[in-house]
Image (cartoon, rainbow, N blue to C red; front, side):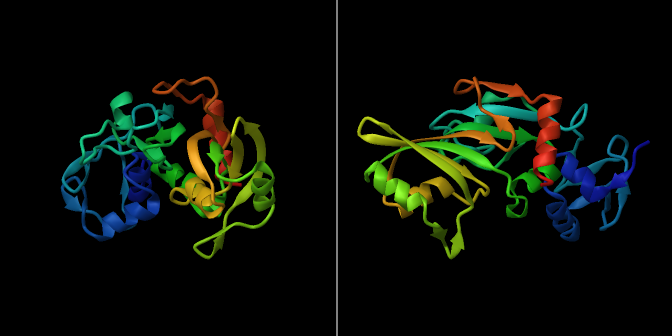
Amino acid sequence: MTTMRLQRALARAGVSSRRGAESLIREGRVRVNGTVAEIGSSVDPDRDVITVGGRRVRPAPGGPVWIALHKPVGMVVSRSDEEGRTTVFDLLPDVPGLTYVGRLDVMTSGLLLLTTDGEETHRLTHPRYAVERTYRVLVHGRPESEIREALRRPIVLAGRPVGLVRWSLRPVGHSTDVLLVLAEGRYRIVRRVCDALGLKVERLTRLSYGPVKLAALKPGEWRYLTPAEVRALHGASRG
């Protein structure tokens, strides 16, 4: 018999972060064995019947699941889409509680991490932990020398400096290939940086998230993370 705090059990099942789980409990949406749960309750996820909004929460078999997907351009990062577009979950095995770690917009490709570990999702995406993400973006609109000069100066969006760790440039025909490493994941952050610099984005790909790399995955392909990669992710989110 393994007991733990209810909010931890919900986070491990991929329902939400611990903080989000606490909100669900306070709202009276969580029941344990038919009884409305309270903050601080302890549960055995393998024996107790836990429901959120009437839907049963089941622990992921064999511990948290971690998947790396090469998201293709044109796919939505969502469980379902009101416009009927294909979503990334159409490419993946049906794993209860599986959720994504940081969105990619529909026209961005590259590495997308997915997991059933809601608590770790929260840490990997929270600004406090400054987990690095690497992007390759092909742009045009300004000469390479001007882009280089602009990137040497602080970039501020919505009154807050962008967490730009490092960058590099190389010319590609009439365009410029820019490699950006960011220690944050604000909404559409790379595209907003390019807009602020007067650049037009031709192609945008995420190459890595923390220590996990896209590597040889082709668009639409996925794989389970290795135990070493999962340990490295835990290390990255604890700084």
